[in-house]
Length: 398
Image (cartoon, rainbow, N blue to C red; front, top):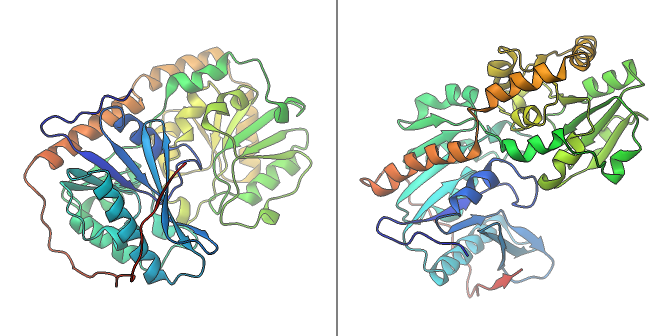
């Protein structure tokens, strides 16, 4: 049973996220599950739409975290959706007796329904440059500027994002994504093949993650065409792009999304792990979590020249970097000829400094400083959404 710290100075964490808890297990999940070991954590998702539904909250408890998802009727105007989110969250926080808390933002868009709250502190964990992503809301940049003014503490998900934003806040810190080494190290000894990968020939070159506008589809197709005997295994959901845009090749295998728990089983059967990202605005500041995860599995890694992969991994010779098809193929060929024992020893020396537990401990120390210290009181706007008449909050436990 969770031993929640309710002593002097204790506080809950209300996390506002643009990502679904059960979508892809990544930075928010790693951090919030660790946070939930000692305190109450509420992970508030963006709303879902249901036909004919009254606004209500769908509640699920996952790995110690309470996942809160607003559900709103189809066709509700944007201002009404915002008001519903505000009223539902207010009622929920009252029912849970959430009075001493930190607001932890992953999306500035959540300010629209939380700007009236009075937390001990506001933390902005800026894991990506969301305004550069496809279909980003036009108001996102202005809301992020407002969030920067309100925040007592800002984290960035990588060094390049930190360099771009370090002059925008007085208390900003780079925390590149880390790795659960033991989870992925299991791939080194797994012999059982997942059913949907079992019959795919070798060599296998694989990727796991979201398939979206950040993927270099032309590179993927070019590698498949240049080496038809290679099998490219692509794990992950397709988001924001037309699935028909994925290059159809007999040697490219789109196996869909997989659970975090099962990823080592797939990695175990790969000969090379890939980071075939496009070089565009959406990838300019990304810091792929999968880089150290591939390394923990002991697999050679080939990536395009993403800044936070080139430095430090490429510069230290841990990852091979190539951008055009011919160079990428050549890098993969070299990777498959590496001495695996020497590679793993090199990886393990580097990975001794990486741990989500260590990362969380360092972040929590900074959070405690602002949450338990003098209040941060910026001058901010006081705009409010118009209330919805006679809205009745409802909670559904999943």
